[in-house]
Length: 101
Image (cartoon, rainbow, N blue to C red; front, side, top):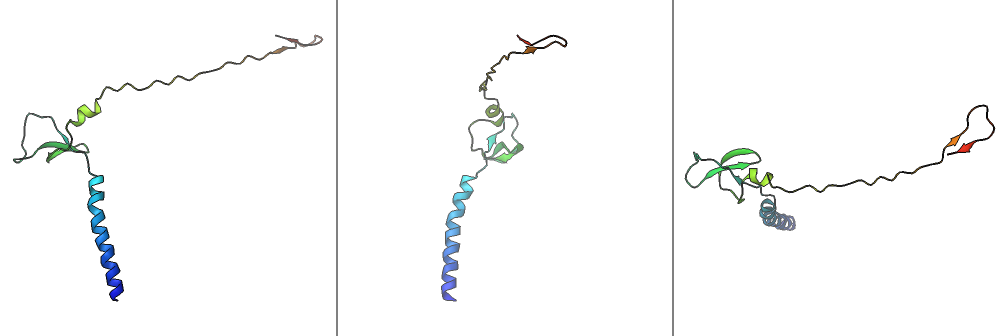
């Protein structure tokens, strides 16, 4: 029983040390919301989190609208087409032999 409790404590300690690292890696991007009114409590400002406007502290330096309006030109891909011409036979009914065009 004592051996089991020691393994359980080691597993719990390992889990506790891993949790803060995974939470920091999956942190949501909080963008400042550009507005002239600020109805948030002191120390907070309007921010957007996944499209929802609320009060908080942003962790990005630009607004969500300006991040999505970045003028990056998309690369144009041109598909090359090759045309092949084949000889066609001309065999009218009632004539002898065929001619190739």
